[in-house]
Length: 425
Ligand code: HAM
Image (cartoon, rainbow, N blue to C red):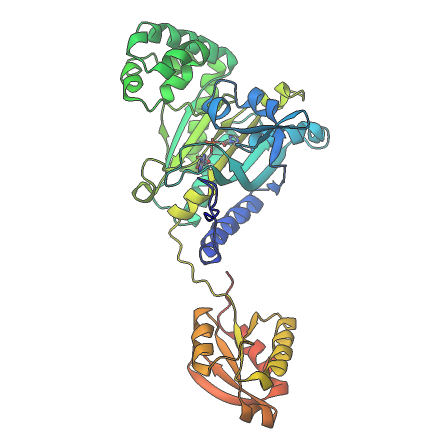
């Protein structure tokens, strides 16, 4: 029988790696709290039409990457991203009726049937946030600046910020027509996919990785020439605010991103290219001023972003010293196991992380394991200690050892750990 393996593109994260994940997640949660975001949890499964209507029928995600299935007559999809579900929940729970501005953050698994490579998976985790009820551009600038600080906090030193404005529906329609007319003249030079996109979604051709398409769009009209005055002013103010904040950025007029719901502000941040190669987009986001209305809610503007957690973990340069326990209780024979279990429990009651080794292995093997787990203290229970009602305390950091009456052991260990290193994974 062949062994069962994880589904292609879906990964296990083993405890040896989880410390790095926690550092990133904790830094993110701290940032979110500082900026007034509250956590929201929405389902992993949503009705398929939610994504078709928001992400867009002709996007790569909806056309070929969704895990969709029918269950008891309902068309369902494993969420490929978090914004649509958050907006659905916002409308469904009438949140706009309770508060004028809503700031939500989330973390969780997303699913896209993409071709797996480093930093690109079929199940991946996103850290994201949605800010509803503020038309910007102040909110937009603050979000971008917040994300630059966050990337700095997790040790991504070379983050590059790209911004663009897609304009509102009116600007986009004008640009779409101009771009389609231009590319129609080059139809034969486009990839097969893009020839099809010409009638369905010409903006996506700007985003194509195919060299034929990249060559064809080189002389294409610029998006910004087609922005309305109001859109142009919105984008000017965004840049002015970023300048006031001292946030470095580059305007990339070709930045379109792979989701159809965007309006006006768009941004991406790239970094750690040495580690991530071509998949170095750490996060992306933008404004989606019409989604709430499109989902049957009121006219509420919104902006948000999501970051790929795996990519952040790879990019993050923060050193993590993981320790799984503080105190290691080592009975040297079966006779000491009962006493060891009691000591272990009493240490935990004092908030001390403790590990009891009840395997009855040798002192050497037990100390090796204590070190491997990153314990600072070992409590050894040999025959002599048991007979005397004592315990031997070995400070593995300070390399000292002493014998204590057993009833003092918990207090001494707790005090010593409190005064010294505090570790958590
Ligand atoms: P997105 O650009 O599709 O935007 O994804 C955001 C980030 O998720 C990407 O920059 C990347 O870091 C990560 N990511 C995407 N696909 C994969 C994958 N297959 N494997 C690993 N990481 C991946 C969104 O999802 C929007 N919902 C962002 C947003 C929120 N816009 C407004 N609000």
